[in-house]
Length: 233
Ligand code: ADP
Image (cartoon, rainbow, N blue to C red):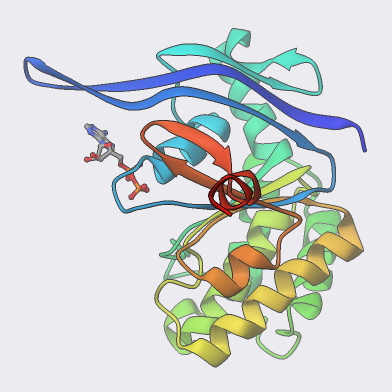
């Protein structure tokens, strides 16, 4: 598998008044195209911060994030925004669907923002809603959908631009166990069908353990959980 992301010497600090909080101290991570990776770690360890920086929503304090050999933080703002819209899909714990738009319109939104031809975007959005099991819910607004269905719409929206990678932050943190399991299975199905690379931040050990690689973020660094467990054995 070829490398999709190469993250080197990544540091992220936040300034809080006169204080500097060192959240990511030294993160080095390579992720292959099509790989499925989980990241666990204590609350406040910096998992969301890491996903934001890896997803180019926030800038690193130091270090580089390369996508297929391109140093994306060297891009001018507009080029970086266009790259993000096309190449990276995000799903968060809270779905952030637009309440006044239907499921179909929500899924179409990234394509509309990019200015892509509407019929093609609509077709792709319909196809994805069918794939996530919501072929019968095109016209429902988010408030007319269950929590699990809302998260399925958010997943379809994240995939509408056919991103290379899907970054998920506690996407089933608010859902009951059986609804969560359905969404976890869907992630694997998406990876199988679209070869989308998955990076999943989660407290759910079942989901974390089902990924190809299981990482732990603690003390500002990312390590392989398998190596840590071998080291302790
Ligand atoms: P996790 O996702 O592992 O729970 P976060 O990445 O949300 O952790 O937060 C890591 C640390 O960074 C926390 O101490 C948090 O308070 C701090 N932090 C996150 N975002 C900001 C911000 N915008 N400004 C200042 N501190 C922040």
